Amino acid sequence: MIILGIETSCDETGVAIVEQNPNSSLSIHSNIVASSLKKHAETGGIIPEIAAREQIKAMAPVLSEALLKGIGYHLGENTSPAIDAIAVTYGPGLIGSLLVGVETAKTLSSIWNKPLIPVNHMHGHLYANWLENSDIVLPAVVLIVSGGHTDLLLLNEKKEITIIGGTRDDAAGEAFDKIGRLLNLPYPAGPRISQLAEQGNATNYPLPRPMIGSKDYEFSFSGLKTAVLNLVKKNNWDFSQVESSSKLQQIQYDLSASVQKAIIEVLVRKTVSAAIHHNVKSVLLGGGVAANSLLKKRLLEELSEKSIALTSPSPELCTDNGAMIAAAAFFSPPVDRHLVKAEPGLYY
Ligand code: KG4
Ligand code: ZN
Image 1 (spheres, rainbow, N blue to C red):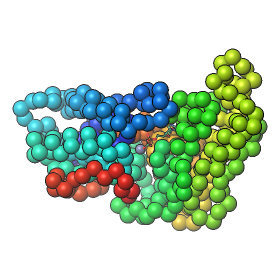
Image 2: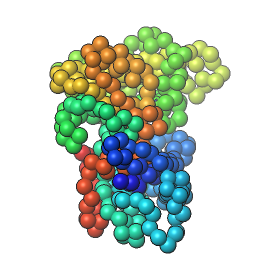
Image 3: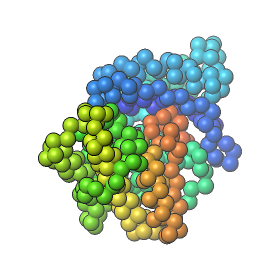
Image 4: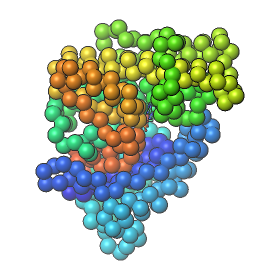
């Protein structure tokens, strides 16, 4: 079975062709992603209308490249492509961006007479774990950490998802991005903070680990952002001058290391205690922050002692892409295409 997956929930336009093999492992034939990230770096955050307009521009070229690379099909041929279904993200996300993918998918499903499978974006991040690993042993605790989410899930069976915790305010990726602005780093700041952290000392600036001791699986990251803001204000640090001051540069390195350590310590502590409490065999990661190598290293250290396996998608499959939407579609039923709608605020 071959599925065409379309993802347009935010600033990435992703289209992929994924095949499920007879032994039920998945093969990615193509996975093309265009991003309007550079435009948002100029404004320091995503402007929804710009993201939607960029989705419209990118959709046809990305779709055409994914079909050609994946199955040698030229968009515009008279016959339908050799795919069995079309999957598309219906939400959550930005409404203007979602509409581009949903309406494209509905049109293609109608012209080519292929079933349409609506996919929840968060399920995409979760099932991305099966794109490179078909031997995942359940039950599992799943940590989804992206720009909009910090969720802890329990997965007893492949389709049985229970939410066991989440953030009360900022998501982990959002914390990286907002603190990045205080350090004068371009959006999205997560990858840059983790790069700068390599040259920093994580113990120079003691930062809070919000809710680390709470006996639940809830998170809160807005206090961390406020702590960094207060530190920057108190010391009058102006990170726009970082290039002309080696002292300021070192402060930026050290703060990056301290922020990364604080966020990761909370994520690791809660994930590991959830895994022990629920007696799971595996921990799965998903979402853009799962691309962070220190997060994976620390989790691996903690979990291997307890003989719990850690699975995480490759970095390019952690951030938004079409292959993860196709992967989730193998676990979801098709829906009458007239009933498929963009749902910006629907979680899980
Ligand atoms: O999943 P994603 O591509 O989009 C959403 O659905 O939000 O995640 C993007 C988020 C951003 O907040 C970005 O700063 C963060 O993932 N991110 C990282 C890293 N790579 C991306 N955060 C920390 N370390 C990274 N290496
Ligand atoms: Zn995402």
